[in-house]
Image (tube, rainbow, N blue to C red; front, side):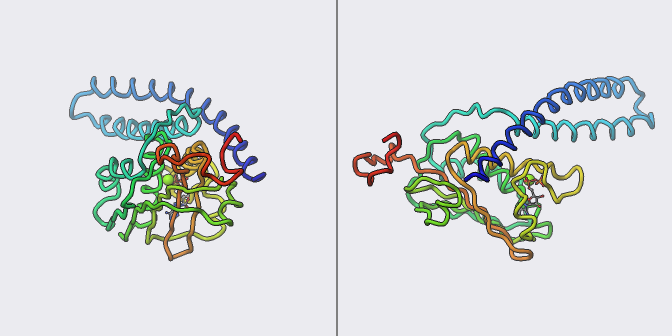
Length: 260
Ligand code: ADP
Ligand code: MG
């Protein structure tokens, strides 16, 4: 747990720092893109300069995408948690996920039959899904299989200790791919901001840092299982919303009810 606090602190300071840079950087990019577009408009259609300026604009747009990621990462969690259902959230972005993942990957959804009520910001949970899905896609450049699962689970003692979870039931979202997998050395660093094994321009190393922040904010945890060549499974644990389940506090064993 101490390591997690340290990690959270590190994320916080990097976030503040990155957010400042991203903000200034965005203003600069706005100028580059703006003047580039004006120049493009004023050039004759057959000008060879058109192509070059087109390339410059594409690069500037990539930089804008990166700084958007940075801002997202650094933004203080101004989220609104509402009573939501994990299955509904997954179904809501199903089409979008399929489009992002592409046709070379066989994608399946195996959702819990009963409702999985959680207290969550649905947009943030969608972002978690998106980031896990794009990583899975990147790990399967030659196609493969990707499965999204939801379930209700009571985490075991090991998980509770390792991640400082409270006792009780959780909604679990797992994302399982048949891709490249990763070495232990890589696995230990994946939640660090800016850690990426991807080419420059392809990865920002912020996806999983964002995912980590969101899940912590929801009092959950994320576990990963992976080995080189054996694919990867991410499991996200989010506390079930007991109020929506009609669980009465008096029924909980002593010590479990929050606030005494
Ligand atoms: P990025 O995708 O920009 O590299 P992330 O924070 O999303 O940044 O991921 C960090 C790194 O974690 C990736 O570069 C990759 O090495 C590793 N990784 C994440 N998800 C997977 C996966 N499903 N399979 C293999 N490696 C992964
Ligand atoms: Mg990523």
